[in-house]
Image (spheres, rainbow, N blue to C red):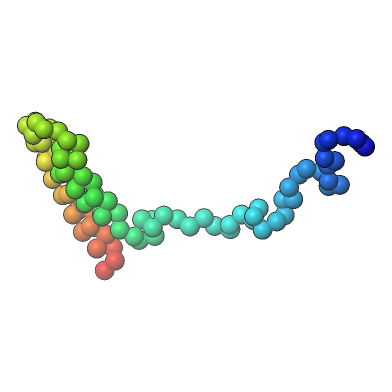
Amino acid sequence: MTGSTQPEPAPHGDEVPQDGPASAQPESTPRPTSLNGGTTSVWYFVGATFLFAGPLIFGVDDFGFFRIITLVLGAVVMVAGFVVLRRESGKRS
């Protein structure tokens, strides 16, 4: 193809070789830490914190019914966090 502006294809084609180090698949995917014995109760406490601070974060000026709902939901999530923490502490002992 003399006189062409197109580059000629490489002798092996335009395909990327599949046997390189980038194509190697890990033998086993690491599981999330919560399944390996890590703590998930901390996420309950984080959620409860956001529920308690929800009206302030979202800038709601009327703290009536919305504030009561977030306080009740935050308390429920915090109690659930303590239940999960106690269960996780019992498994480690």
